[in-house]
Length: 364
Image 1 (tube, rainbow, N blue to C red):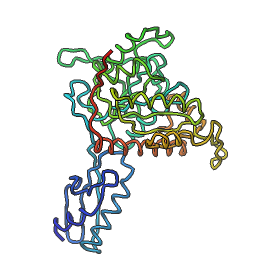
Image 2: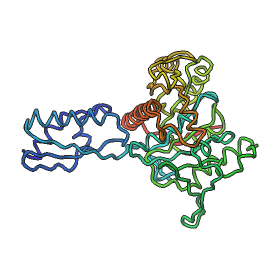
Image 3: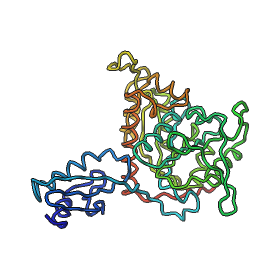
Image 4: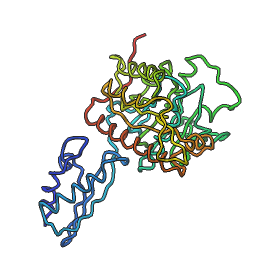
């Protein structure tokens, strides 16, 4: 067996999302051959790749079928998270993907989804930050158990920079870490927008595969400020199944699809899709209606990223500062892991197939 034999065999293995073989995509590295033992590394487009097992099986089959059926094959994986940033990177230079999590209305569990999406990315091996851009209703300090903590400052090239807090392996920043939680943030739009700009320009986020941004509900000043400040990779839209939430989610879809904004939608996730009591884990009760988010995704021809159940442990974990992804409930964790895997997959497809976004220029 030669290295050329292995490369030729692996050129028959398709990357399922990008539609090309893994050799053409330059994903195969470090081929080693020792008698019947063959090992090589496949470089994935994201650590959270849900296609990992499929790629491993296809690689083993290709070598056994086309090179030597007695070969003992070890497929290793590493990742180099894809990015499609082609801006000057003056802001957030070390961040590969900026993902905004949005909802048309409040109360659909957007912050819960954003927090667990960030944690699921990190559980897959990615470097992740979570920015709480919900200025008037910040929830990150409570959900991550960091109430009362304050971020440190450091000097970077003569400029004072805020160091985000770190909890459960991800970096966190929220207005709730800077102001007393007993005081209401009573700001007009320009002040709130200015705070969001500061979270981008004055926070040292460092090197990240994904910066997940928990946006305020609706479609307003803060959304436009973010889109005008940094190139957003894509948007995840959170809805619940009932018609009231779906109607507002459509407004979010319409906003990001406008010609002057035109930011790709990574997909739609349906939160509180059904209720499953802990004592009856096989039962599903569709309290808020059934498959509303899925129908919305079909209507707009958008990826459907999955359903998150209404489970008591998800609410309890958020209140106790221990989100579902770091808790013990298997159903909750599986739901968020599957959702994050599909989101990561669609981000990689978006980076390969869609032109890069740039900060939005809106003429007032």
